[in-house]
Amino acid sequence: MKIVFMGTPDFAVPCLSALAEDGNEIAGVFTQPDKPKGRGYTLTPPPVKIKALEYGLTVYQPATLKDGEAEKLLAEISPDMIVVVAYGKILPKEIIDLPKYGCVNIHASLLPLYRGAAPIQQSVLDGCAITGVTAQCMDIGIDTGDILMKSETEIGENETADELHDRLSVMGAKLIVDVVHAAENGTLKREKQDESKATHVGKLTKEMSVINFQNTARHIHNQVRGLNSWPSASAVLNGKRIKIHRTLVVNGKGEPGQVLSLNPFVVACGEGALEIVELQPEGKKKMAASAFVNGLHVFSANELRFS
Image (cartoon, rainbow, N blue to C red; front, side, top):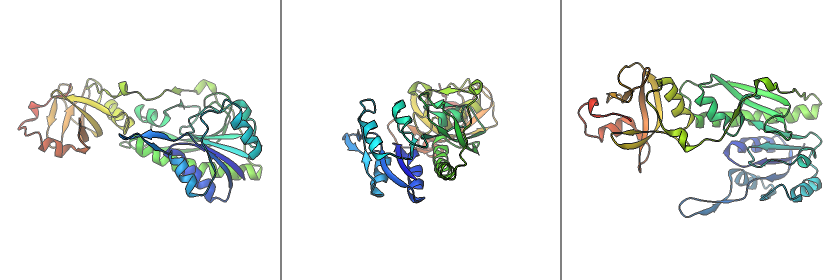
């Protein structure tokens, strides 16, 4: 099939690779413009561009899709399908209506649940047991188009959003290949989304980071998992802020924020307790909690308290 691929971050790369290696004609790859990164503000290409160039594909990086130029270009290319995976730009209706098989989007949730910007992180924050990926036929709404196919997976009790992200990206790659095959075979079916079940999620913010130890251990554990690796959950220990990257829910009871033991490093919550497994003091690298505690030179857990 003749496909134009639109995507930008790491999540989209497995989909591009799967389509290319499945023997499809990738007639063009649209991705966001290169952006300055790092302390030196070095102009850096997005992951999809890097992968596309490895395959020798033609890359387009328009600053906008609203001026009609992208539409003209796509009309000339005349793809059978446009595949969109975390592209980061809203497609005008004129582009959505161009391809024979439409614009197919891979979304990292089981639509109509978790439409919007951060479905992976929010599903972990909410403590969901199951999530997945959905292939949907795009329309002018945000993740509102007809469902084509879904693939489900369980979320591990201690799985982080980053780990889930990587698994879902691979699932999305398999799903988009299945969609293309079904379209070619004439067996692709469309199902309207149930609007009564729709939920929406916004972007992550740094304000979500602050841990309140009055909350339950399970709630905080989900917060730590869901915000890994950005913006990361954080708390203040004896006046110094630290990021908390990995935790385990354990038995324990005490005043919320009180450190109950040093080895393992356990803190009391509003209900239950958390073992902190990995953390990052301000201005330092990630480290095991045991290494952090060894460097504190304290003799009793009672000397430490989170606020």
